[in-house]
Image 1 (cartoon, rainbow, N blue to C red):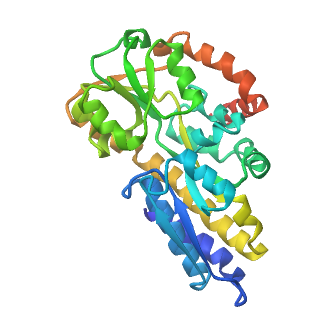
Image 2: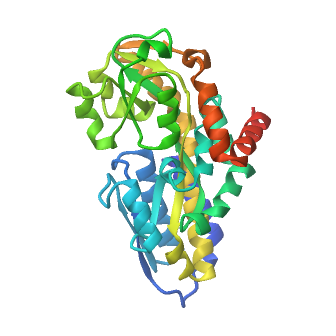
Length: 327
């Protein structure tokens, strides 16, 4: 997490002058679904350390990883009521309440992990955050990401049609559900902690997952084929409860906003730097390894576009335009 440390240090220098002696001490709680070694969790811990330093010890952040405070739907409800202060959360859950954010999951909007990072740093992406206090009851300070989505399954496939009927684990949200429905598999929503056992006992035939977790959590032990598709990016957003935000001083808002934005942004650099390392690690396990592009999915991409052009509205066209400019 050297990149994260550097960003945190730089942001801390910017905001250190904001921690006036009259500030009211706060002990913030930050929830995530990712396990302790995950890039997002490490970035959250770095954010907490940076905030404590920048505030002269007045503020602290306790990080609760691995769904200790509930799943993302439950944590988002807690953010809305002010029972939870902060979260690093998938855009997936946000899109369940603000459909415009489903545009981030447009198949092949991003060519690769570098392109995905550039899109998430674009003005078009940042402008979407402005609606969150009014529509969802949270303040979005910036974006992070996991790696590109891949398919790990049992049995090879020359096209998505060869996966018809398979049970594929997905993250439980509509954009990816619609995508997998479009090519005839049985998308099976499932929380992350259940995935390993589900693969092991045959409850699912395969999974939609990023390379970091496929390798790091040894999912490849219960599948024989990795299909590197890079079919979607998987964004994350740093959130603060709007109720909590409203009670903060302007100085604290600036401090927290700067430092959390730097923390989530640092995950983009981490995935850019390490994505190929994780992919190479999966290949080195000896399981069958395929590479596939948009043609693999046939008409499924057009089917998804038809659904989400209506649901996501102008957000999809704005992000598509930004993506084209950044190629």
